[in-house]
Length: 491
Ligand code: FPP
Ligand code: K
Ligand code: ZN
Image (cartoon, rainbow, N blue to C red):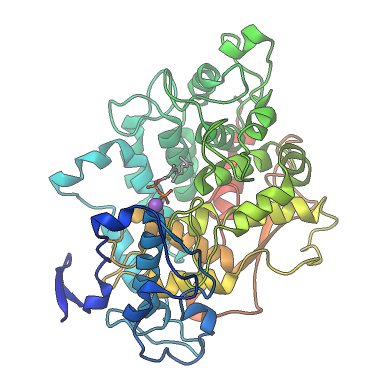
């Protein structure tokens, strides 16, 4: 019997196979079953998939672990939920479908959703009040990916961010809030995207530099705010800000790190990041905890900002182990990425995990020899087709916006990072021997180029998105223009 679910604008009807599987209490204990049977198989719709879809993406995996746990049940339920979308059969999917059985990107709906996300919110969204710079960043990045000209909101962005900057340095998550590296990262990147002198000149670089000096720790890492936690987000956000704003690499005179003999923001940082690689090969938020895709991106992007990936990543990470863990993030039939071992596919990892691949590829390719793309020694390190199928088939919400997975509501965070992931599948990202910056330290960070991939596409010309800078996650020009402007300004 079809079920009715309340949507934002109208009531959407889902067939009953779309309900999350109820896990009976007694099944939460690990149990075993014959390895050959798929318990959820009976629930799988027998309706034939659209033509053009390989069997890999239309069936539960053929090899199964006989031990059944709560994680396995959740995984089975997720596959059941995704299959009708992967097969192109779900009634909420909008076409046209291409010859590969993949639905078109609903560009206008997503553009509309993101412009809406910059308007007012009802009271229930109060928890987002500390994420104001992020709301701006996700919308502007998503709109840029979709080819919108975001300079049209320049004045609004400046006016919104201006009160969030604190006299003692950095941006808070809202007016009157403590400065935080995550909010400061989102604020600086948003200013880069709208661009222009007024936006660049808004940042107080002197106080930013001093504040960052108070966040740098003796072990090489960064706290995310004064008195706050230290993790790889802090390190990535700090190095993003330092490199884009052309701040001095030297620590301010009163920085805590100076008391242990450190002189620069990058001192001991590679060692700190190296200590975040775990026994699984993935990278954790801080030494000793569980590897996660979001932190893997932060660590690898941070290493790629502070030096060429073939030096920094190769020196700090066990590459074969990292490749093995990263590859295990992608499964069939879903095709999208999970964030960690034994957890579920989620559209936002299309960027956090998807964004790691070009950085690893660059570490493997080695020192760039020319201004053009390097010869491809190996094929794609991940299945672009799988990720495209998950994004276009499972992550598009029927009224605009993109989501974690079928059954979840869209939000601007997922819309941004799912689109960023789609863009990543559509481009080769590589470094050249030419840098947009005159800096020696950050020469590598500003030497990235992107060119559209033409082979093995399962998406259409109209689904093409803008390329993003693989380290700064904003359009290339936005990052380069900001850096060049500050290079020309006295500090
Ligand atoms: C687990 O959530 C998620 C994390 C432990 C990391 C979240 C961090 C980010 C998304 C990125 C931060 C980056 C910057 C630049 C600030 P979960 O348990 O709900 O999800 P899971 O089951 O998929 O692991
Ligand atoms: K998640
Ligand atoms: Zn997510």
